Image 1 (cartoon, helix red, strand yellow):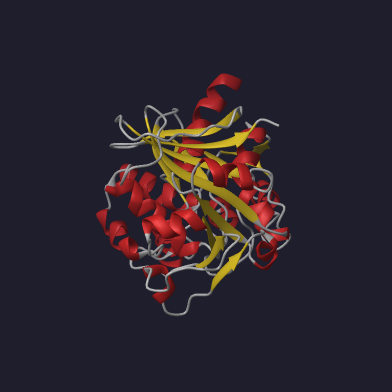
Image 2 (cartoon, rainbow, N blue to C red):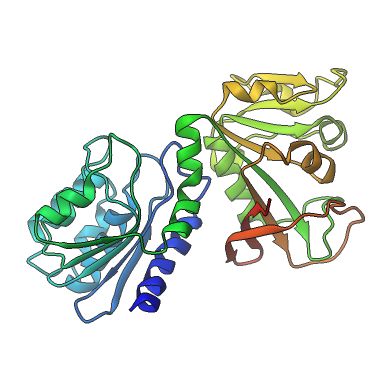
Length: 335
């Protein structure tokens, strides 16, 4: 039974990790819905702040599978989906089980309460990974349990807590992650490395970041823009880590409107930001490793380049995703 539960929770976890770094200021959450006979009906995730929560995404497509009612595909707002499911479910979820990486929310904010929705759909079981530490949203398990649903929490809790860590950190202080792209032979230099899809994902992360940190040499050599143009998003503020402030101001990153560019030889300015991405290579890795919470690597299936990381470090793999062209892995230093 434990192995079976872990299998379904792993489906939810893997789906959620696809959107880690994209949901700020909300947590990344995944959900899987099973029929009463154990068939996987749908797996969903929260994709971006303001969009439906993971439970709603999964229930939407589980309902489609069970009812073949394609009208629900026309609905994109969480409140619309909630109301449609409540009005049209016709007990199709009777006996179903929900696996979710985080306790369903109890409050009504930009989206309605997921716990209230689950409590009204004749769900049989709710299996939860992490409890919600946010006082505003916690208490969802109790709402669901009070409706007669069997509730269990703590399944793969450590893995679910790892997924939730960025949310916990930026609620209290800040979350810092270091992103880089490399080839199979470990090189990180000499032109574009990762695929367009991977670069688009990075731009989406920049869109929700408060601050992007980069080294002075990278700015001088690469002359980057460091915006979110591939997703038509906002450009984050920039910290250029450098002992010298002698930069060519025609470098594109300096000409972005509504952006603050800070040049400093320390990370002191990070105290003013909550969701921070660092981009760089070996030198930046060494400079920042003690303040970084997660590392994110995009590994391209190719050889080339000359320079690679020189550090000797061990990491814990949090999640590994094989995308269409690149391998994307979230890792954490094994301290």
